[in-house]
Length: 186
Image (cartoon, one colour):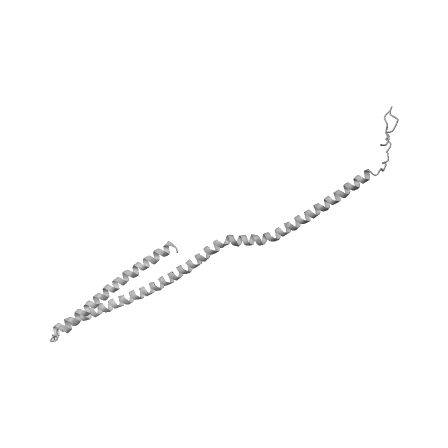
């Protein structure tokens, strides 16, 4: 979660708590006013409103009713705001949870990557190793055959030189003066 999201959530929480305090304060005032009205009305059973007093009281009651209606409207407005903010907070928490889950999943994938790469590398290296082993076997076989052929050729050459075959002697084309005899065969 980013720092701006945290600060937004914190600011919203602060505002929600402030609105709740205001709402609670107004509820207390309404409660006190209704208790006071109830006490005034209930305490004076012999109270018969005088027309002048009654009009004044009715004016006050009307003003109180208007104030009460205004407070109720404010309470409704604040309740709507609180509900809206609560919904927003719930959505933000869900988003945070989803992002946390995704982050954990990605961390797990990152941790598993070296193993995956090793396994894939091993899978790719297996045919290469098999090919190298095959080539090495073929090389050893060819080396053995080459040694065998070389040995047979050496034996043939040795037997050919010791068989007593006389090699022809070729006359020299130009003999130097004073040396008239050719070189005898060995």
